Amino acid sequence: MAQEHLYSTIALCPECLRSLKAEVFADEGGEVWMERTCPEHGTYRTRIWPDVEHFKWLTSRAMPKTAPHNTIPMTKPCPFGCGTCARHERRGTLLEIEVTWQCNLHCPVCFMSADDEEHDPTLQEISDMYDVIAKAVGTDGAVQLTGGEPTCRKDLPEIIRMGREKGFWGIELNTNGLVIAARDGYLEQLKSAGVTGLFLSFDGLTGDVYEATCGHDILKAKLAVIDRCREAGVQVVLCMTILDGVNDDQLGDMLFYCLENSDVVAGLALQPAFSSGRFDTECKNMMTAGDVIFKLSEQSKGLIEPKDIWPLGCSNPLCDTGVFMVKSSEATHESGFFPATRRLTYEEYCEAYDPDSPQGSVFYDILVKKGVPVNTGLSIVIMDYMDAYTMDVQRLRECSMMVTVPDGRAIPFCSYHLTDASGRRVYAPWCKEELRQD
Image (cartoon, rainbow, N blue to C red; front, side, top):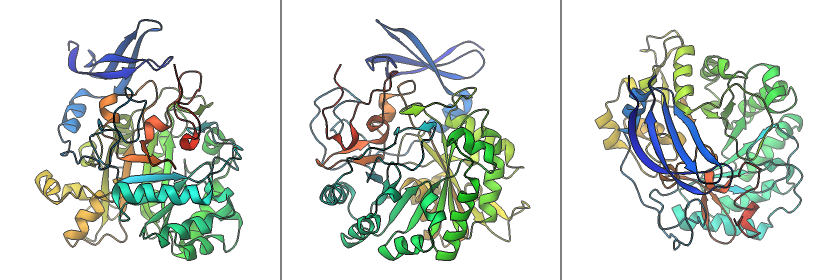
């Protein structure tokens, strides 16, 4: 099989973040690569997908683009000057508010490099960021409170309550769960304030995985959070950061654990690790979303095939894919579940697709309209974030996951967290300082 050119795009030099023309191609073995040459630092070749035929199939299923509202003028080349600028092609559907950079862990893998940053945003600044989201997508948009570790803030219930008072129906808390596991009644306090769900970092089902990704075996605390969620009636999405040779062999185990606990576990988010921020854990190779799709299929005991997992439509197909697992007495698999995409044509999917749906609820919203019982189903989302090695400007312009900052901007997630090879950020936290200048 000869090398096959697929398309051209704009990528970055990982050392200096210079914008460079890049070529995307399939090699003789059918793997997909992106190559560019920096006049100062040389040629970089980045593997971006394991199978060219699957790559073509997936990218052919891109949804029509819904443009963002309230863009700012273009002042700098991508990924500088984001906010969201007029070059951006898709509107945000999931917007984040960083409430702190403090953290009660020092994880070897942390795209924020969160630690003991003391300069948290004020309540007024957080109020301003809620208003950014309301202006960008309305109060029907999904809001995720993140950090650092949000539970480090003593006024977290007040922050949650503020969002509900502003009219937001859904406020999800991105957390490592340590405080929730340790403190009786704390989750109930957050629920009373208005939190609607947890996005819980959950990297595997054995202690050694957490020693690699978090620096400590905290599995017992993670399992305790799920028990507390069940008791409090708060749904939880488990977020698994995947590293080759560390926990990539646990995808099937995680899938079946989530299915067995689908009364409280609403979703499984699978995220190949990326190297922005702090990345101090050894792994064999950096994985792509395509690797995760194929490994999940291989470990699912016949429950999921690679082409059961479809683009979620809100972003570039290489960024967000997923499937909804329906629990049904009609399921032929021993788990009692089947992938919704087995009973849904692609034409029906396109017709019923709602561009306002966040990543995790695209299939959920479609199935609800069709009258399919979904309360004990499981949403699976595979999110492939970009770093300086994998950054494709075209993909960046289609980002639907934004980080809000107090000055009124909503910045694409991957550009906001982007760091160069020496670990320097492009955007300071909350953009309280000047952008990185070259």
